[in-house]
Amino acid sequence: MCGLMSRFYSFKRTNTILQHLRLSSHMDAAEVLLERKGCAGVITLNRPKVLNALSFDMIRRIYLQLKKWEQDPETLLIIIKGAGEKAFCAGGDIKALLEALKTDQNAVRDFFREEYILNNAIDSCRKPYVALIHGITMGGGVGVSVYGQFRVATEKSVLAMPETAIGLVPDVGGGYFLPRLQGKLGYFLGLTGFRLKGRDVYTAGIATHFVDSEKLVMLEEDLLALKSPSKENIADVLESYHTKSRIDQDKSYILEHMDKINRCFSADTVEQIIEYLQQDGSPFALEQLKVINKMSPTSLKITLRQLMEGSSKTLQEVLLMEYRLVQACLVNHDFPEGIRALLVDKDRSPKWKPADLKEVTDEDLNYYFTFPGSNDLKF
Image (tube, rainbow, N blue to C red; front, side, top):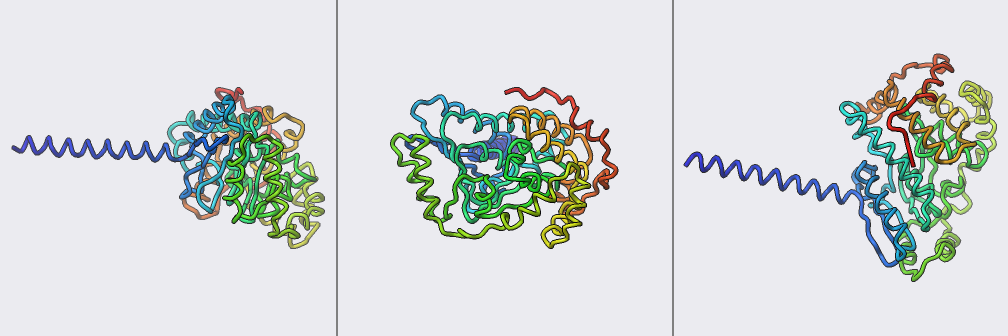
């Protein structure tokens, strides 16, 4: 009898584990929703509890579906959005990457490689691609939106490339799109991780349209209702909502400070940028100075060179450069330390090595820019 009961409980335990695995598999499958609605393919980043952060599985599934829709003559439009009200996508799942880094560096390299291949696929996509960048949009979230033909911001959009705060660089093609923004705005955003908010995401040239958040559902419905959407009539629908938007119409924080940004961030070295900010002495300049002084000195110097070199490269050349830069960052001190300070212990007091800009030499920088990489990026 005891043996029978033991087998029964063993079976029950096994069945419970299997049910849990099936549930986990279902939950994983639901991390991103890929749906056909009318003539459109709709991508919904579906991890609202973690601000729709990108996992490796999400990146792989979006890429494969994007390629299918691109070849499908009945899919004429692609829309990407985030679930929930807080975020479009706060970036890659950095915490998961840090855990993987301890046991399997190949898996981490695969994540970045697949992510950059997806970024390039969005840029070269032959179907109109509409990104609804409502809410927090950072890092990898910028990468799955900024290369689409249409990017729609709302008054609740918050966009940033904050990688220098975690010992990394503004990747996903940051070296391509940031230096191509007006004046020195991209250099400012890449070095400080400054958060563009609301209409400034449009004013900066990152969003192509601005729509009131309460109209976003109606906008999507109107796009889905198009019988045979072309680039032109998609643009017409977006423009009709854009021109009716009145929220913060005459408000732009960024434009107020463009003279200071252009003047202070025009230098060829981070040390000179700091000197210009000190000389300026305005509350805005002193605030940026305080921010920069908290960033990884190594990341700051890599980022400035990355943006300068990227300004004359193609997107694919930049992504290849960044793939190698990121791999070098992964095996050095500052990236895991930045994650520890920001996301694990949350003490916000990273101990950078080197801790001073003067200690980051040209030889150190050359190490990052000549890093051979592993399983190099191919498109």
